[in-house]
Amino acid sequence: MSGGGFSMTQPPMSFEAAASVLTGADSPFELVTEDVCGVAMPVFKNRFRSLREILLKSKEFGGAEMAVWDDGTRWSFTEHERLVASVAAAIRQKHGIGHGSRVAILASNSPGWVLMAWATLTLGGTVVAMNGWWQGDEVRYGLDLAEPDLLLADRNRLARLEGGDPGLPTIVLEDDFDAYAEHDHAAELSDVPIAEDDLAAIMFTSGTTGRPKGAMVSHRNFIAFLMLTFCNSAVLRMTRPPPGEDAPPPVGIMSNPLFHVSGFQSGALMGPATGMKTVWTTGRFDPVKIMRLTLEEGVTRWGGITTQLWRLLEHPEFEPDKFHQVNSTGGGGSAFSPDLQRTLREKLPKARGDINVGYGLTECGGVCSMATGDLLLAHPDTAGRTIPGNDVAIFDDEGARLPDGVDGNICVRGPNVMLGYWKNPEATQEAFFEDGWLRTGDIGRMRDGLLFLASRKRDMIIRGGENIYPLEIENRLDDHPDVEEVAVVGVDHRELGQEVKAVIVPRAGARLDPEKLKEFVAETLAYYKVPTYIEIRTEALPRNATGKVLKPVLLGEAENTFREE
Image (cartoon, rainbow, N blue to C red; front, side, top):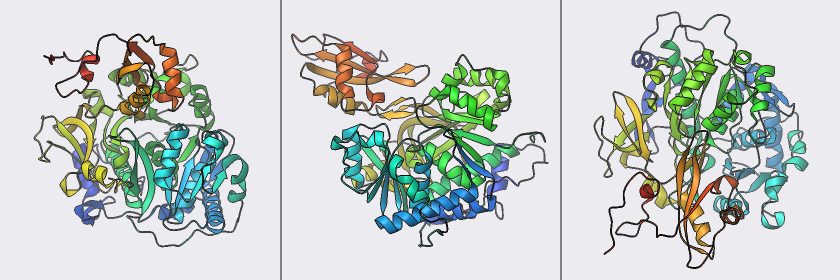
């Protein structure tokens, strides 16, 4: 399924020619038209029909090392499957988890997170991936929305809930989970029927109301994303000279949170699907730990958000000569600047031809377009080509397709696109044009087959890969008795992509302390939502004729042409 067995002895081909060969009739990635949730679209003919099939197939990799954790835990593919089967048997017997059950996970990256997720999926259940950075009110909101049947949580995050009581059956990771992993060494994976469009996970994403929305991701969606990744990798290999015989086997390292679609896809799912070894880090991102594990475990691929890559490359202990085996890198989550691309080429020369920049979102399973290698060198500002197997197009606000070079709504269609938003039919309807086209909320244009981003249509701030909706912070600051007006904007930041800035007008006679305001926000919101910058101003915020705050004016990107008479 990974495309690893293709012969690369032929001369390099163009991307378009290679894609045509690999997706044509009787090819490994043959595309055929099928009905997907009422919409006819291309799908991969030779695909898994459930994620459990991937886990069963992974047993063929046997005793090869699958996962290495920074706490010393190591699994082979055989051991991973055995542990998943044991956890699945335990949660079925002790908690009645089965097809259609929802299991929430509220924890930092850990072996238990991965095992519980796979156990839930093999039973036909749904993983509710709770954001591990949420504070108490945010956690309660997520639990109330998803209504899970079971919760796996670590002590730290459980303590954020008032009284430490989530109000549902709970497994405390540090205290209870080992008994589930060792419940039954002889357990077999469940054979309960799982349909392609059964709900596999609820992945939380920020929405237009400022509250997180639960993107419903099916087995089909996850598998389609994996197939897109495999196909794109195979196409790219056909566009390049073959690697040398001494090229090391690929080994990845994962520090992205598992509650992000990128961490879940590239970490928990990719290894069993490909046979690739993954090295895992736990806790906060630590560049020293990443560098140490890279050398100890033979890591060849560095991926992650731009913030993490900057912190690695600019760390005083980073020495390019030590990391000569790193031959691939890339990521997303915030602007992948030309400056970062240049620095990667300079400091990781073996990866200069395999720097990968993707565009995507939770609602389409991750990445839907990709730029890499010479293409990225020639067009450092592009979001790349559409990955074969899904479609990216530009539409106007009425749903009409726009020609090349015209800015409009970036839309995505394919078997990788989510089912909709959990318990939010209105938001689901707003998210789609006819015929299954997902409105990403971003503005961009196509030019000569390449996607270029123009702006975020919504006011979303992307800080270090985390989506932040300003309204949530504005609502919190509005609760402060001395705040008259507030607007929250994103300002550019070299490492994080953006930082949070609040512009505040105090009430008459009030004196505001920026540090006290930050503490006020931190009482109810996650740390990454707390404004780094606070500007106190005496004049009213600029507004248009309808009363909407003109945020481009606050950012210095436009003039306030509205004058109140």
